[in-house]
Amino acid sequence: MKKITTPIPAEFQINEQINQKKFLLNGELKTWEGNTTEVFSTISSTEEYKPTALGSIPDMGEKEALEALDAAMNAFNRGQGVWPTMQVKDRIECMEKFVKQMETKRDEIVKLLMWEIGKSLPDSQKEFDRTVEYIYDTIEDYKQLDRDAAKFHKHDGVYAHIKRGPLGVVLCLGPYNYPLNETFALLIPAIIMGNTAIFKPAKHGVLLIAPLLEAFQNSFPKGVINIIFGRGRAVAAPIMQTGKVDVLALIGNSKSANALQNQHPKSNRLRLVLGLEAKNPAIILPDADMKLTINEVVAGTTSFNGQRCTALKVVYVHDDVKDSFLKDFSAAIDSLKFGNPWDKDVKLTPLPEPQKPDYIQELIDDALAKGAKIINKKGGKRTDNYIWPAVLYPVTKDMRVYQEEQFGPIIPVVSFGDIEEPLDDMAESNYGQQVSLFGKDVYALSPLIDTLVNLVCRVNLNSSCQRGPDVYPFTGRKDSAQATLSVYDALRSFSIRTFVAFKDNELNNETIQQLLEAKLSNFVSTDYIL
Image (cartoon, helix red, strand yellow):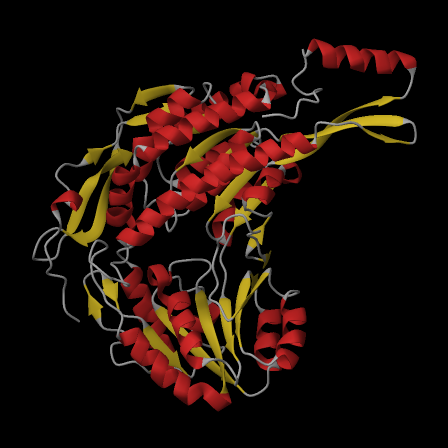
């Protein structure tokens, strides 16, 4: 496989490193004086391959982690803090102030997305723009949520004024593959609902948070958002061990989620908002439109090199069409363009994890030893920072590539004669996020759809699996998720229904009337124009 030799455009060159010394604690941008961890990109800046040094981040530990926890707890102040008791319109103003400042950092963050995680220029731009749109959509939905609550209910002689209130302190840990979008899908709804947060960026895509620190600082009251750096086991574990975290918000893998959850001494009190791994299948029926199917499966398996929880990670194809599918699909995979993120029309880009090519090779070797073959000519060919997507067939259940969430450029294909075979596999699987179903016969599709919606949370008809649009529910069954993200659902995942109730009598009616007229309570309010 040829190495990349194209020059780096001037606007994307790394002219100086970002040695991130600042972190956000209790409303102050503090300077870190301790040990640091170097940040490298697997993209080379030189003709002879060499990882590019991007900068460094603080290597924090238990002391800083607990200071951040204290800051978040003090800001919440047992529900009495400025932030949780603030009027909805004022919290919205803070969020609008933040997102307007964020928009000025687009070019800087897009550049870092490319260098840090190898995401292509169009995809990096899309991630930024999508995140901004997500914040504005969240603001609008929060307004509607408050409008809907601006009333009193009455049942059995009891009035109730029901709203959604914050849960408390949130520990937020985002993923490296969408370090902006999916991280903010946790962080933004968490804080706008009145919670306070400790946020630790992912191991890759960490520097791109730096341009936003000042915006976070000057948009929200002190302690509402605290941003620290370091290894998860060094900073997240001590925070959880205190038992003072109310919500664990994490997008990553179930092992990390379980390990952190187990650190909490009172797990019954811990709310979990988790986006975890998946093994989303494609099921190709005999009557599938093969041209459309191949285009969608190529996109589903190779978009961002398969490094998405929503990627298609196993392809089931009916025996009647497997030969034609494998031929055309393999050719389509081999025709994809590999290059650096800023290269025109690039589809495959360097992998951000230096060890990922070796891991993919292990999966290939294991599959080959157990009877699979690499169907496409380029499959498994390597450069210093990439391994070409390998189409493997026939894949069996004893192969690692079938069992593990590969999260990278490798495509296992399984043929079937009876539709019950993939359905049984999905029922036995530890995962249940999405499926892509390809076919046209409504008499075949109808019972399949009715079964699949009870095995996964999203059935994509003649379409690849995906997260968006962000307003749609994003969740999963079994080991794939807990709670639901999206604009509408996330606001509810990070809050709890709470209400003021009173019996219908003269005293209470008079008191409530006075409360409404005085406008002294931010909770007891029927204001609905925001």
